[in-house]
Amino acid sequence: MSMISEQVKELRIAAVYKEHSLKILLEQAANTIEALSAKLAAANMERSDRYYGCGWISVEDRLPESYTEIVLVCLKNGAVSVAINTTDGNFVNMMVGASRQKFRSFPEHNPVIAWQPLPEPYCP
Image (cartoon, rainbow, N blue to C red; front, side, top):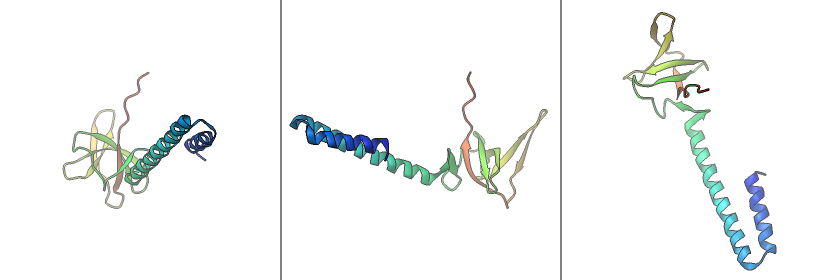
């Protein structure tokens, strides 16, 4: 049983044994907690339908801004790479070397299936 469920149960038990005004207050608190818990669960379910998990966004749901946002991409085979979205909705792999950057398209047999923004830089 979740912590919220336990607290609601305790509030309802306490409501049975307390004075009338406190009983009403405890009952209202339990109802509020249950309602908010249900809303939170529904929001989490909705989010999990849109995301693969851990911040991954399906390319079927949304694409990043073209040429403005460097992102991580997940390929069909599970590989992860750094890429940029082009104006036609395709991603190109960014291969950064010591002396230059190279761009190449991902193969058709292993397309990008999800993406996520790069994390914020580390701040010690």
